[in-house]
Amino acid sequence: MDKSIVLNANGTLDNKSNQAAINTPENAPERDEKKLAIITFDDGKKGQITNAKPILDGYNYTATFAIICNNVSKSDELNWNDIVQLEKEGYDIGSHSMNHIKLEDVPNNVSEYEISESKECLLDNGVKEVRVFTYPKNGGSDDPFILKEVSKHYDLARTGNDPLEFLQCQIGSSYTMMNKISCSSLGNDINKDGRYSIIGWSHDADREAKGYDDSQMLQKFIQVVESQNKYNKGNEIRSIPVLIYHDIDKESGFYTTSIELFKAEMKYLHDNDFIVIRLLDLI
Image 1 (cartoon, rainbow, N blue to C red):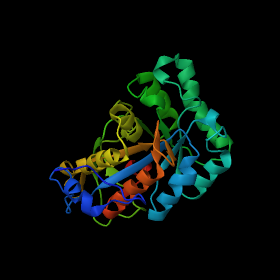
Image 2: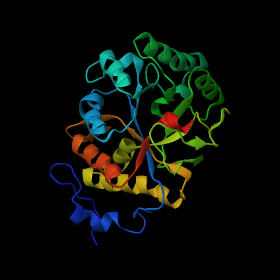
Image 3: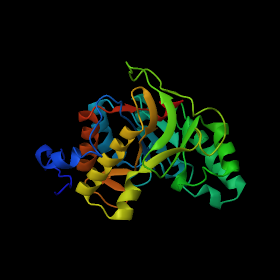
């Protein structure tokens, strides 16, 4: 049986064609269990506000936008007005370092600068609150010096790259976006498995590694977000997919997700009753 995922011309799921793929035992939603997702964007690409934001707004979904401070206002990058607008409209703004270098490959004083100065840069340019750091190139979250430095300036940090973040959380039966989830596993301890090394899944890294087209990428997306079902039981949340996107544009390419694929993925979350929460809701 062909279990590839099919997109309609407008980017929506072709339900008839996709029924076999979506309803396989390994992908079938367990309707009594809660399903969650967290959406993050790295690098500060212009398509995040022009193409992704209208889709997020349509579903009232939240997200975190992590900015490379020295890339702001360059070609195809967000400018300061964009970033301030995103925050004013309720999105979280995080730091993705000053220059997007791999932190564990540079001297401590350089990594310290990249971590601390990027927060000050955002604040100096009109961002009101910067509580999240995302590691450039997913590097440094297992380095004790870098972890300690990140903990001085931020409340939480995200790295990658695995499909699920494993944790221990409780979620209320009447959860709303105004409530927080209680995650006992994410205390203030500075360690490689805590709040300063939340694991994300890089949508784009998987595409590059496997050479997926949009239909295959959608199938992979569904497998990833549904994979939490075997771990979460009722109000006990043991795993959450933390999704990492980069640019959103007309066509998929190197670290770029097409608008139509992004539409289909967000529609899948909506149509299958996922609760989209903030990274900061975890703490």
